[in-house]
Length: 212
Image (cartoon, rainbow, N blue to C red; front, side, top):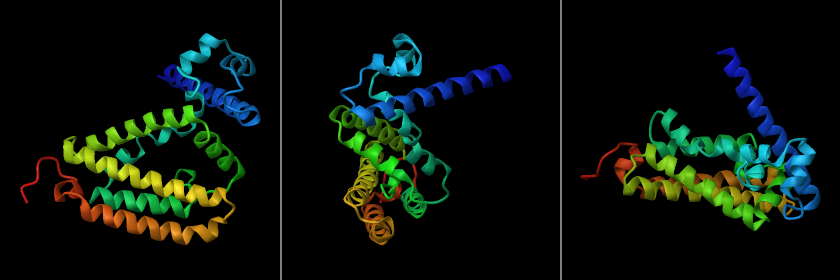
């Protein structure tokens, strides 16, 4: 068991180290200007080894947000009460601690990463696939039917648009302290409207079909 644990820790450390090296190079030179071979050389591994860990060049960047892929589904699964309310609280807590995933963070490294991510078309496309998987996971825990899929799509869109608006304002030079009140108010409005518009069964997190 300990050997398995050690191997897993070494594997995760490799992911982290190679991703960090790649992102540093991409930030210095631009995503398209850096080859996979250059990343592999900087990480002191072979290209085949790199591709075993990261099947696509874009995955070197997306690894940094990979943990968030199933986040909405986890929040709903672990919550007591209505799913949208749990997700609302989770987003507001993220705003309070300036979680980068909410867009409300002015750390220069976070801003540089977001600029790299949203300013590179191939990364935007890869991030969309990440979004689709997150949406599918959320839909599954909401019941898996059409109503659940529609609800998951709306929820993920609300989270994404709120975060993008916060990031846009911070990137334009506004201070976190000045943006936060608006960000909280916008999140309260958005999640409130979202909850009001969902079918009662999905809003309550119950599988099955509505008969109301």
